[in-house]
Length: 235
Image 1 (cartoon, rainbow, N blue to C red):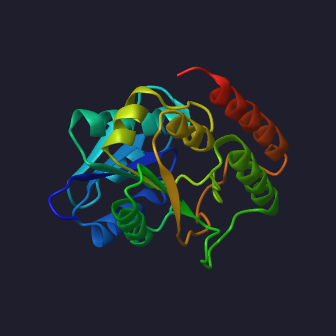
Image 2: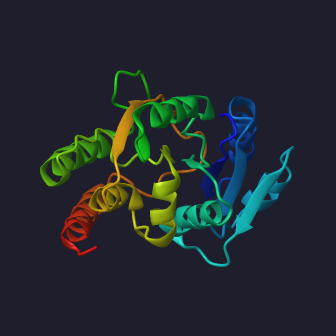
Image 3: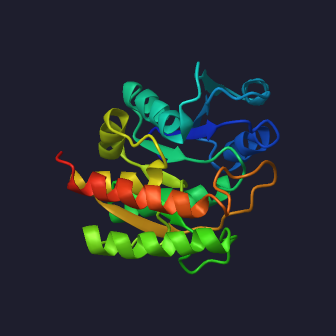
């Protein structure tokens, strides 16, 4: 990654069983990246395990649980304050293989986009989550085409890379609740460009998603309403 500085931000909540492997894989595949683990007030040993990983790993322990939005924005604030060129967002549960992050970096440099989303649905063979969630992602696909004239095949993917312009914006403004779809609207509203690249993802090895099949309809309704409010809200 030349002389450009890149920060891998890992939002983590109760990921003691997977966090060390995620960090080690980043060290293997992205040795030039600095690593920041944002421990979102975990109730297990996530922070301890991250600190015990070989190598220089930065760990921020939030004093209360902020959710994914607050945890990721903490990473943006750190990156902005410390003058990073890129932020790569990688989940702490092992679903985002760090070896695939190189595709994100190559795409953001080649296209000049401000954010690149890693998509499970672009010419790759990958774990594609549950049927109910795939349905929701398809709904978001048509919604994005309607509102911002941009096809986004995997709007809920948290496997992303951002450049300086996106870091600056999102360090100040970032959605709190289910932020990935909302952030797409936000970046578009401020004139920033978005693209996708196909990546492989894995099924989480430990723990459970907070979005269960029973909660999926509620999640979809909530996110759709949030997207519309983000779309009509003034800058």
